[in-house]
Length: 355
Image 1 (cartoon, rainbow, N blue to C red):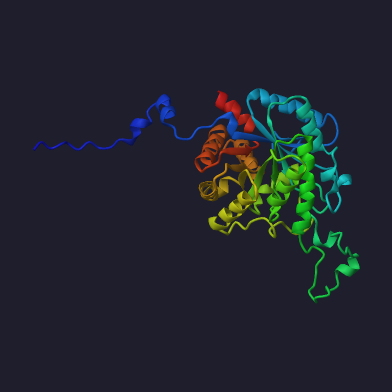
Image 2 (image 1 turned 60 degrees about the vertical axis):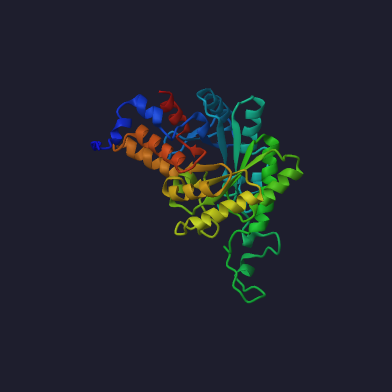
């Protein structure tokens, strides 16, 4: 019997040229995979640099419209709006969020009337609009039995001490978010993305949109959003840092594992979310993979401000090849299960892919 000689496996045979590597690539990027964030504020002819996020700006609606036109011409298919609010327009309940003439609604109408061929996504939250920087109505500010500062220091009738910063009221905040969502839908939003991590927000917002005649509007749930230190530059960009405490009472604890993340995502889907998100992206690739495998709706990854700022800082110091590092992470997000990626690099990635 003839012996077949041993031939060593050479894995490099599929790597020796650009064309061969492209032919067998399992993960690809296209313009449809990217969503560009924009920060908008009231006024005209405003293009204010965000120092901690080089290349990003606070824009007035008229300038934002110009920017959207340029993005559409580059092939970007979607954008997400974040409102930036002047201190004079903020209050303890974030009422400016439900002003039909705020910057988000104005930008939506301008883009719709201009026929911008991009999907309009809106971030649905109150942290940018409240004077205290938290994501909803605080217990101390509730319309139900609002008390003076002196009274708030007293014990409740049950004998339990109620501190002035007793936390965000979940259900009352959800009702306010529902009103904000309807306003965004009326102004032209295609997709509404509740980001405050309030329990059952998706169910309340879905019901409100359906009652208002918007059953076709999609919901992108920030289902898995961690209380992360990577949000720092965003808080400068949106002018929304908490004035006391932090958001760990309602955002997720990074010490928890994938089971909680899967449960959060499944709850959002059960309540009507058409898509879910994992945020941040890069430190949570294991969570992204687990969630994408567990739900039967598209899953997004948000490459947040801190991730962006670190790449920019390292690139400016000459420590990394910015293009190669960013494209590597974008492929990682897709490989981990992201159907699309929200990133401040959207413009640059499309330019690099085009080249």
